[in-house]
Image 1 (cartoon, rainbow, N blue to C red):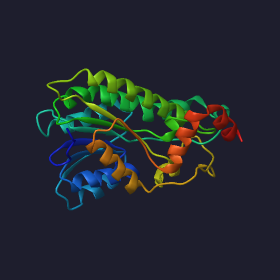
Image 2: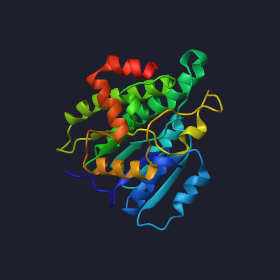
Image 3: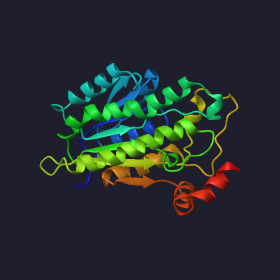
Image 4: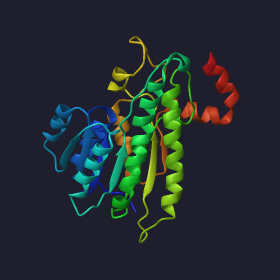
Length: 262
């Protein structure tokens, strides 16, 4: 059974820019009700001002705040008696620089935003998703959740954790079918995306840059993400460069270790 945007009730975190903003626009244009979550109220106001068939419900706040997570699900629950059809965990932050030169707070903040917050949001959203129509949890991960690279250790760790939790939950929820309406967990792993992500690195030198080959605009990532959600796929790896990194590592980890160390 395919997931359909029209008349769906959805939650998208990290909605103020990049992939999250573009995904909100796609969902709204297809008639979805979108609970859009971000810290920047003015960005959500811009989204809400768009002419579209769907409806936007803004929630301003930090996903690491338990009260904000409660508000997110309460806002979605008021639309149609507690039904939720889609949860997209997209909010994320990163850092660049050697692990040994950073402090504990850099690791904790990245893990809080990229792993613990989406984990708890999923935990509390599952009862609502069980009432949904072909419900989907979509976790925006990274190719770096498949193969880690130097100088992004905390970010890689958070995405590996999200990858592992997604795989485990997918199996748990597949056997937890309610009237044949099991929750699908879709893991989307983009490569570098041209967005504001690198404008807000934490605990990093001002001149820090991401070393990567090739990149996609956020609108393209959002389109591929929505396609994966609609077909209720388990996992997609985006971009040729991203696939090359992941599959080369699967073929010969020692070779990739040598290449990345250089």
